[in-house]
Image (tube, rainbow, N blue to C red; front, side):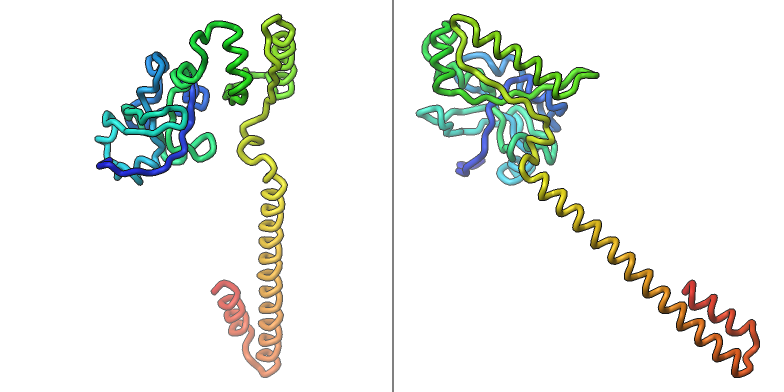
Length: 239
């Protein structure tokens, strides 16, 4: 954007990532299988916030090229902006950009990524990956964990199997994690404040009604006709 330089949070994902997340681009498109070809990334998808901040919310941003200095590359890369995501979608972890992971993996892996020895080397050096998936109807997280554990054990038993492991968590736990007790505490505090506020209002209404009853009794004692005080009481109660 006119030579503007900025730091951005990028995420390397597969083309299936957006479908698993159940979201599509509001402008242009998301990454597709064609973007995963080759040994260098050629496409990038922007978050709504990044698009507004650095491309001034221009629809013409789609189709432009952005020059990015990626941490895994020695030289800057020129990538085509293929899409912009809807407002609020920044998964995971406040992402600004999404790039295809497959070219990045090929660029930093050993010459033959199809060789089991090279794959084992890669896993030893780049050994943390996140996968996003949807559970089938009728399957809960506990069942999925059990099945995933069987897959991992079978992989470890293979002659070329790596010492891999996997942790399955729900999207809610991933997003809030250890902050869940704090969120529950804040929610409980808000409910308590609401109860106290309602109790205060109820107390004021009772006090007001008592004063009205006293005023009505005094007026009747002084000889006022009954319709007058009753009309005033009705007016004060609903005014």
